[in-house]
Image (cartoon, rainbow, N blue to C red; front, side, top):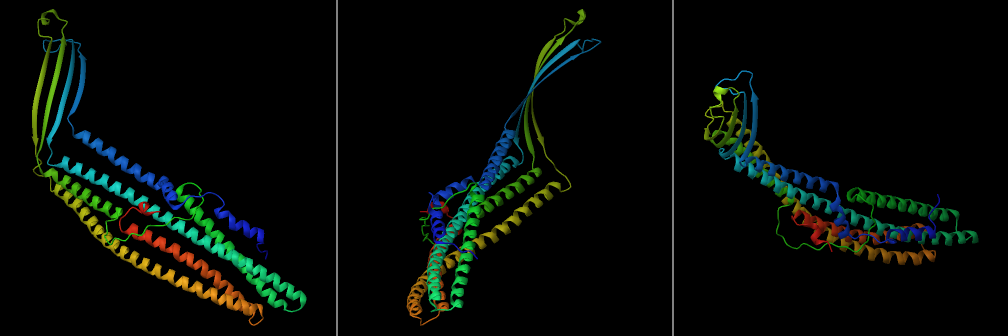
Length: 415
């Protein structure tokens, strides 16, 4: 297998940070252009527009009309032609409380949409944060693997010189060649994982980016828990369903409608005997209508019962999700504590690996141990180096999870 030479290694090492990249704060800012966020925003705008339409429908309505008619046989009561202009003003004074409950329904729905939008933004920010630190972890693994390959390459050339001098065997050289090839395969796998992360970011952000390291997450130290935006959205959805149930019940109450109709009649008589009749007059009629549905075979009650059960169903889901969110927060804190322990463990492991490597390296160069022991020590050293970085980056993700599950805006804690 062809392995990566020094020039290729240098190029691979330089590419990730050779261009100016975006830090985490900039990536989260770019994520606001995500299509899911745009869809949530448009959904909320549609609900707001629908609410404005509903409010307009409850305001007094004015209807204008006009009629023109002609007849083939004129009489004293039927002129040759008649023109009628009319205007009707109507207003629902009381509708059993349906109007107020409908307003409450839309206001709760709009608040729910707003919280859902905030949650989508926060979830995407959390996903971007995970991608960001996964990328940096992979970069640290890549750097460690490149350094490992460089040292393996140097040892391979050293053994090849010994083989030419007859002081080592071919199988010793083949062992290190095999290790170099394995390390190159691992490097390509890491590179594939890096490209996968970059493609995932491109899907999320809607554009290709480069990444600049250096960002971190501010630790959230308060134990106070706020409701997450998705839980708040459910809470407002509950209010909307309860208002909808109350609106359905309004059919059991009377409704009162005020109406004012004005008409102007212009009558045109052709017969001389009828011309003395009044050919135009105005009429204004004000009416107050009361209607009350006394009996409808329990249709209204059944509608209310069905709507109220929808409310109760969502209330049960709300209680479940609220309790789950509390558990998720406790688990996030637990994972954070474990992540801190992993850092201490990784640092101790790196110290031990470095010490063991230096000892075995000296023995290997003096012929006291074989190259298998040396190669294992070398791998453990570089694995330990990348493990420390991985643990540090994992801690940042765990801090982000705590912030999200605490109901806070993650973007505000990115530094």
